[in-house]
Length: 184
Image (cartoon, rainbow, N blue to C red):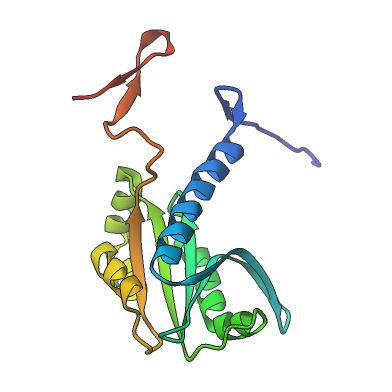
């Protein structure tokens, strides 16, 4: 038929993709800042092309003392699990080579999936608990502990629920007239 339907969703004058990008960028900023404060060398949005496999890593970090590379994937929404796991596996598998291209020579690779800390993300993780437990056995507390003292053994894999500090501390809802009010 050759028909095409284009739909653009906007909110308060902004395109939804721009709003999601702002949330993603805010979480990347928190991750990068946290890692730097813990002694990691950090690069963000690292593109790669290794033997025809290409993509980008949200946050690539190197801990020189522990000789560990960390691959961090940041998601503001819980995506298609199969596609995310496939892509994350590729980035982790290629991480040592990607790091060497940047002058980082490591012996081990760890990976962390960062999810925006909200009810929707937590509910999605609960719905697919077996998959998330297998892919990311460590959770937020264990991830933070490991980031402070990473071990040299490859295979650390964790899930870090991270709050964006820009958001209000109390949940808010829009009331008549477009005003926001805190829920009690």
